[in-house]
Amino acid sequence: ESLSKLRIHYKDSLINKTLILTGFKTLQSGRTSGAGERALQERQRQHMARGLPKQKPIAGVKEVIVVASGKGGVGKSTTAVNLALGLMANDQSKSVGLLDADVYGPSIPKLMNLKGNPELTDKNLMRPLVNFGIPCMSMGFLVEEVAPIVWRGLMVMSAIEKLIRQVDWGNLDYLVIDMPPGTGDVQLSITQNIPIAGAVIVSTPQDIALLDARRGAEMFRKVNVPVLGLVQNMSVFQCPKCSHQTHIFGSDGAKELAQTLGVEMLGDIPLHLNIRETSDKGQPVVVSSPDSPEAEAYRRVAAAVVRRLAEHPR
Ligand code: ADP
Image (cartoon, rainbow, N blue to C red):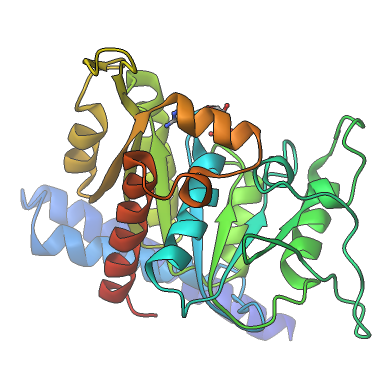
């Protein structure tokens, strides 16, 4: 066995050398872009992919969509919830679930107005709690609300593993995962352990949030998760009194970032009191004010996500 390991190691180191040499030749010959570089990148990608753990699908779940953001407070969870509801509102025949993977600060229980401990099935799997027709699972159902969640590396990983593998989701067309903010170990572990149909990145047009969003998009690319696109949140504030529109963080930051990264804009969500208030009450805007322009904005994002998923069949 150790001999075969050694062989593999030797083969890998040869491939590494070849890659370095090819890269060097590419540079030397001045072909810094184009076919040579693309071939090199593809070989590097394949090489890296071999070192990644094998992905195992979640039983009963057709497509997993992760909602991510480079930093907290940009409206990621609000988007995840309204995206899940928007997917169902656009096509009633679809079943959608919601997994809160933000173990540090779970917000799905509040946003979806859910409380309590999940029951166990005969197979010892947790039954998700359901509201607005959406089965949900969150660390918030398993720990006391008041207890500060102080987790360390391995505990976080085992919590995530439980949330992913020990839940009876039934049959779902889409499972929307609300990721923790940033690009740390939890995000990597999720993307490496389950096949993900695509990532939605939420960002405000503020410069710093955009910079973080860029890091997020790059992480998904590295682990071969298709980036479905960017949602620009809180870009426009419409005065409820005079309907004047103000671009709080600048108007087109996310659009420019999308262009630079070569990803699509999935939509714009306005900064609106209705979104904040309905979220705080656990009555997401897509279900509580379905006729509002805010709900329409989320449904448009959901439609764009479905369209993009069709372009990336797995
Ligand atoms: P994150 O998950 O990125 O930390 P949240 O979804 O929890 O962010 O949103 C942070 C706060 O901003 C919440 O109070 C939420 O209600 C509010 N919020 C999010 N999006 C909007 C919006 N488009 N308009 C108004 N308030 C919003």
